[in-house]
Length: 148
Image (cartoon, rainbow, N blue to C red; front, top):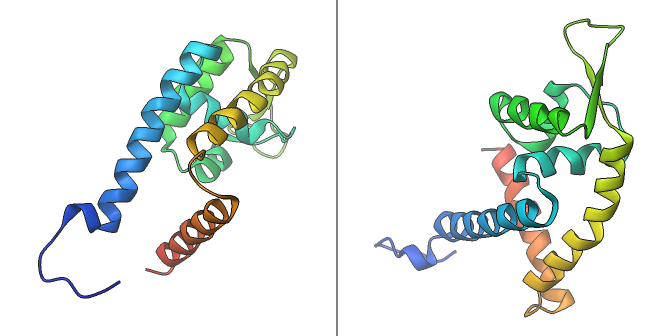
């Protein structure tokens, strides 16, 4: 990016990224609650578990970029709703394996098309090329952050 001598928030990349992330997150929180009765952190866990994997909480922390407390609370919420089950881990009794229940798999199956519709609505003003470029740029930023 070009040289700037003063901070212009509307052109400051971290500020713009946070604006978009906060707004999208807030909108999705309402969507998940109204449509499916779950929280945004609960959905993030379901999205990761939706491919049938059996994971431990530590892996979910890493994969979702949520802190341990948020993951623990979301797991408890999903367990209370009977959407996940924990099974003992033969290699480590302290770390239970977590999977979606039949009800969790069914909810995930119903949610995916609706979530993809929401995403399409969000990206409505962008061309396919714009969307691909945005995703590529975001992935480049994530990779850069790994090396900072």
